Amino acid sequence: MKTEKNMDCRPFLEQLDELLAGELPAAMRRRMEAHAAECSACAEALRSARRALEAVTPQHDIPVPEGLENRLMDTLRRQAAAQSAAPTLQTAPDAPAAPRRAARRRWIGILSGALSAAAVIALALTVGLNTPARAARNSFMQAVTSMEGVRSIRIELRIRTTASEQFDYTNPLDEFVPHTLEAVYTPQLLWRIEKPGRKVLCDGRHIYQWLDTTGDGMILPCSSGAPGMLKLLIDPSQLLLLEQQLTRSHDGSRYDLRYEGETLHLTVTSPAQGDFSESDYLRNSSILESDTRREYRFDAASGRLTGARVTFLAGGRKQTLLEIDRIEYDVPLDTASLTRLPEGITWTDYTRPMQAGRLAGIDAVQAGRMILEAFATWDEAILDEALYSYGAGARELLKKRYAGARVTELGKPFRSGKYAGVFIPCTLRMADGSTEKIRLALRNDNPEQRWLVDGGL
Image 1 (spheres, rainbow, N blue to C red):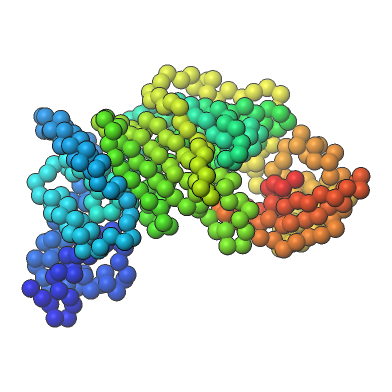
Image 2: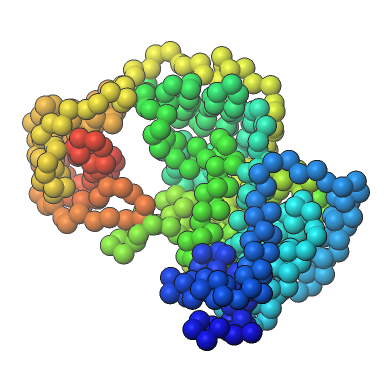
């Protein structure tokens, strides 16, 4: 069958999966839609495929016929054993296009048949629908769904970092630092993350973060980015949704799925995220800004996340950056202890709006020069604005080090990685006559667009 104005049925069927995934150029998508409007056979193929793909995203609990799970898992284990002798499920640029498309059409045909939705989901987890990335997305969605009804969670993990640094910071050369995450989901989300030297919690209204060493604490809105990517681990479903989103980015990530007994292993090998066209300064300073292999383990029966490991990959080196040692679901947690604040902390409330001040309405170079020149006399009128995100203890330490310093060189601002601000290379003549080179981190992504010092000192 052929429609003269549009296309043949064969190319339509070969590109059906790309149409459903939204991966076709607009012109080709319009041609296929026009063909389906005129060809009843292809229109039915499209409807059947859509029904199959929709079934993979569960919207509610699906009753499974008695004995289906055991029969299905036996089938999947046999298939997994057969696949272990074959090449792993990953993107293969040199593989012929026709066999790949034929396999896709075969699975669309199977899924369009009389299988129950539960069987569709299980099959999707093992073999995917048409690409490893889509199979990964289905695995993540199954795990996200499995989090529904979880009342609490406790996670013990290790990260290569330093005790006082932000929670997002990682370094493959650092030692492991233990972290503990605890969260209660009902009746409202309450959580706490601890590592030696830095703590953060959310009491449902605000986020409180403090440093043990300086006694400084900050009060932040719950919508803030604190504590970075670790906040996603508070609710593993959010981390999985991030990974699911990254499967659509077409950034060269590779995906592998395999069964080992009752455990489903999903591996994502991904290049560093962010823009490094101006500088590699932030490369390898966080998990997302590093070349990594991220390995997730799911319980095959429940779909729940049971473990994870992140491995740093660069220059032939391999180093574990993060490893979850233990995940416990529905553990008894005392909400009063979870949200208890320490004594002796000086809190700065960042939920209140800032004044625009003298550091708004100017460019980064002007702001950087104004801030550094204020060091010479320690002009608190300017530095109180610039060091807004630093607590009283940290400011006192900075004053002891930088009071009397004079800027001798101010370089061109540059961006790096996923950082929302800029870095300015600077040379300072210190009060004792020595020279110090720094990269002043400045950002103005606040409603007042006021430049703030965010690091580098």
